[in-house]
Image (cartoon, rainbow over all chains, first blue to last red; front, side, top):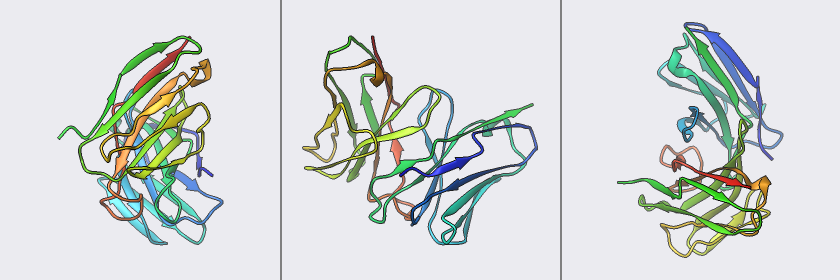
Length: 110
Length: 117
């Protein structure tokens, strides 16, 4: 069963912050975040493994609450290059059957 | 190092025709995946493979078949194409299971855009 993401879409001005949420009805062993630009393939951003773990990538960071089966992606001081669709992804406990959430479309305006 | 290569990039099929989408990776990855992405939508897992000779169904396997005779190749076969199969198809691979290890991330091909008329 695929994870759920919210919101479906976000429109920001440059420099503003955004949060994208990902949750699952089943136990999560890890959460992965990918970004896809229009007309391109998805590109890996980061993986979170342990409950409560946080990671950062430039001004993009994420947290993972294993108990709540949730992950959040934080985009700080957004740049035009952050525009795209963000997907969270999860696998089963064998690391197989990797499925994506429906995506969150992020638009950063000048 | 080419990564994941998909062919063809574009294809138009008539209803009822069959075709094979090719996917090859040169990274010695064990795991390979096929996803489809309908316009404006997310990625749906069609089939995946954890090694040569081993395949398993994903979320939307109906109307497709796969085989994995070598580590490098993972072709996707469409039998009796239908308009509902109009989509962009992405092949991806990873060294091992998609877990917390930094090595086991998905590397995607550029995609194959298929239109069924």
